[in-house]
Amino acid sequence: MYTHIIYTVLLELEEANLLKICRIWNLDLTLKDCRMADGIFFWGPVTSKEWCEPNYVQSSYIAEFFNTISNIPCILLALIGLVNALRQRFEKRFSILHISNIILALGSMTYHATLRQMQQQGDETPMVWEMLLYIYILYSPDWHYRSTMPTFLFLYGALFAIVHSQLRFGIGFKVHYALLCLLCAPRAYKYYIHTEDKLAKRLAKLYVATLSIGAACWLCDRLFCKQIQGWYVNPQGHAVWHVLMGFNSYFANTFLMYCRAQQREWNPKIKHLFGFFPYVKIQKPKTQ
Image (tube, rainbow, N blue to C red):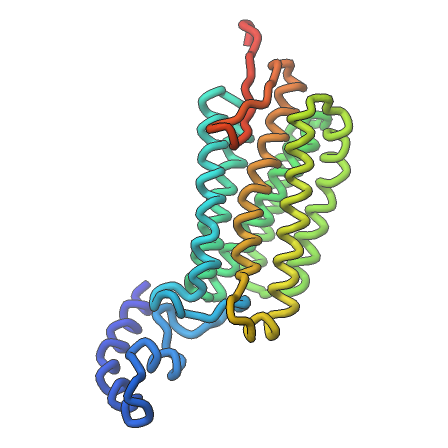
């Protein structure tokens, strides 16, 4: 924090000289353009992975503007899910799951706003924690030793956070995250085939659809960045990925809440908020 304050003060002292130098070469350059040309940014030099969005174009204070604000839908949707989970007194695991979505979105916002290595790790670590939560929610109902699974997953998540704070994994992180996702797939499919309600099954289909389209946007943004940068309009594939993943998490959480309510015999029904946002309405027996 103090380093950033000192850095900002030094920048302010150098701004006048920097403008003079820039005007020698180009009278039309603004201070923002001069700072970018000199490699000076509000959050310091870029130390993390960059995406296919020019840095500090929309704002002098946000490195990747669209990749940052595109996390807002995830936060809003997670808040809707959290309110529903609390209002109907679902198990605490679902409240924690919605909160983890919010933490992940905030981590992603700080990462794309700063493009700093520490903030990138602050984005990636919650991704792993969230998948560990999904593994617990999916597998815990049939796990006979109730304390072993949460204890192991907690220790695993804590160990990963410590190691990840010290090391850069690169492709190793992507492989690790993909394996965690694959662990969830068989159990999620089992829940799907045992669900009879058409609206609930539709949530699972929407989950697959948003994941597929979002993954395609992520890959195109990553693989064809050079070509995209030559287009008149940048489609902001990574930002679209963020928006779709916000809906993806919401559909997944709602579907899992429905399945869990079925297991608990809470007579779940899929309703829609404002005629669009699906949520689970339950009716617990009086004994519960």
